[in-house]
Image (cartoon, rainbow, N blue to C red):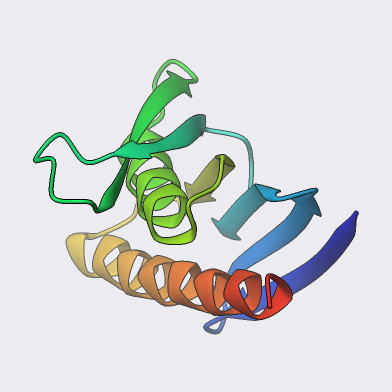
Length: 128
């Protein structure tokens, strides 16, 4: 197995990820803010697009810790990576800032999106 650690952004909006290749599949743990944790996990598997256009899509199953709102981030990231890389992907996400404002949440989202792009680039490079 091959692993890497990536960080995007500065405190308190820093997002850190641990990415591990398990054969062709990927396991990704993403944490950030003031209290990284496991808030939700999504497992996505690639499949042919339902539009029957020859493209790869994905389907996902999600588990979320009660009271957490990390499930949409985990699901979107897992679906994106599984369909673009045509492989099974497990993504765990836990981001937290105390008393987060809408702007705080927006900045965490921007950094999270940049992190998923960085992970995609790293994974594509490993699959060469």
